[in-house]
Amino acid sequence: METAVALPSLWIDWCTVTGTPALLRDEATISRFIHQAHPSRSVLKALHPVVTTRAPAWPATLREDPSALRLLLRAGAHLSRGRGTAWSTRLRTRRLLFAAVLIAPKGQGGLGLTRATIRSLTPHRFEQHLPDLETSVEQVECVNCTVWAWLDVLGANSDWSRGGVRKLIHQLDQRTNCARHQGAAPSSAWKNWPNFANLLPAIDRWGWVEPYSSMHPSSLSTLIKQLELLYETPPEPVEDPLPLPPVSASRISPEEEARILARADEVNARVAALLREYG
Image (cartoon, rainbow, N blue to C red; front, side, top):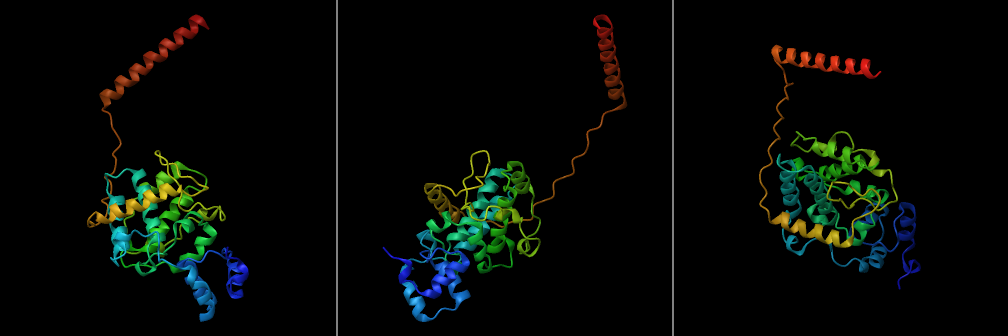
């Protein structure tokens, strides 16, 4: 069994400062370590053997296409913005695209995390990955915008509010350029439980989002299979959602109003008579 004693002291110190488990040495974590600590080659050589397959959770069928993640984001955006798509499906699509960013190879714009890392990922640790996210000219292909869209959901669900999540999902985003992450930051409430592994939660059939824990491993496997299916769906152009027509208030004619008032007077008279008789 490998122990922390055999690890370089620079790595141990960095893990202590950043709150990273010393044995967690996937590609994304090592990349952050290199960027922040500037280790020597000997230090990296001591750590590198643990890193085997890059982005091991990424489906094999998507590895040969360098644009796979972008195509997934575009196809998911089309699905989410369709007027005939149920809000619960839009909600699950946001989670699906967020998962794609987590597991996609860094060369495609993802973070290359393992399944175990995803299920143990806390808001505190994920916040350290935010500077690594890429942007795009178009919002429908922007990794950063995809992540912010899901963090908004987690923020709306911070007090386990299904109504708040549904209201958020129903808000049609009129912007097509890469603007989501350039505007106001997502609700900071997604960090309300900083040490809970709750970034990829379960969602039940009614749209309730589990606020405190990650989905089951088998559910994560299903999610990854859904990514493969979405990839096989030809991406269609995403058009700006048309504004909903204003809802005109219903009006009644003067004759109808007179009949309603007369009926109300009749009812009031009967009630008054009953009160006099039995009061």
